[in-house]
Amino acid sequence: MHNLKKWSIVVACVLICGALIYSALHPNEPDQQAIKHQKNIAVLLRSSTDDYWNYVRKGADNAALEYDVTLQLHFPENDGDIDGQIRIAHTIIASDPDAIIIAANSDMEFAEVLEEANRRRIPVIAVDSKLTSGVTTTYIGSDNEAYGQEAMKEMAKLLNYEGNLLVVDYMYAGINGEARENGVYEELKNYNNIKVVSSVECSDDVNQCKRVVIKEIEENKIDGILALMTTSSISSALALKELNASKDIKMVGFDSSIQLLELLQEGQMESLFVQNAFSLGYLSVQYALQAADGQNISTSYLRDMTIVNKDNMFWLKNQKLLFPVVQ
Image (cartoon, rainbow, N blue to C red; front, side):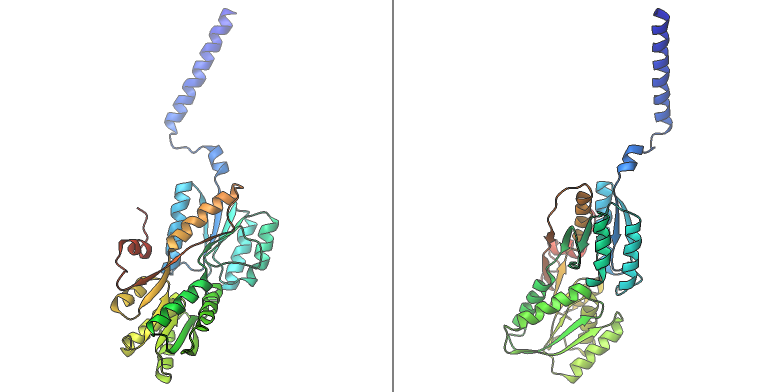
């Protein structure tokens, strides 16, 4: 009995020493249990090159690092590639992620995608663009129709409540562009002396869009321009710059990019409506993780837009909004 006890102690010591030696030789080997339970979240954005979507991506990357989440990042060939987005979405669902974050360019076309994700019980987080064609766990973004109304209010003040207006949209504006335009025309009903004399849609070719805007200015008496998306805002401001017309024609735009901010600083437009793209990306991953863990979350998280102009663009809070970085 005494010898058996002695050998038991020896064997235990050998096992402990072996475990210690293994740990010393493999200090960075990951915990297999942790790997097994690490959440896998798929992210489908609209572009891999646009400044706005790069900020959304940075926010998502930062959240993934903080929460120890694996991200699958996906992008279509271009911002207007709806069919490409749909194909990618079906591929994502087939990979069975723990949650999916979608920045969709269209609503009804995603009905089948949402139906399949719901059937498989995969939470879907709609970011930037609200989806109504099926079940989503939550929406993170702005009330674009409300901000279309706010942009019209801003323009009305700039025009002193009378004048001719040109509305410039983007042909791939999708859900957000339609909502903003609806808001503009709804608010326009309150101003009897402001008239939309023309409304145009631009392609993703900035120079071509600029020529379209120039043609409208030359053929109509334009007092103000409302540009509803990034591309249309850049093109409209460049048109005013080329015609040296920014003193005579007021302009309000949407979104932000390095080029847009340079044009704002030059005085080619009066203001931009900007939302925090970095925050959208970060929050989408945060809430996707909570949904994947089975937590109850709100059906929407509406984010504010900020009116940025030449006078306030260098305020610290607006610098953080326009140039988000990970501290």
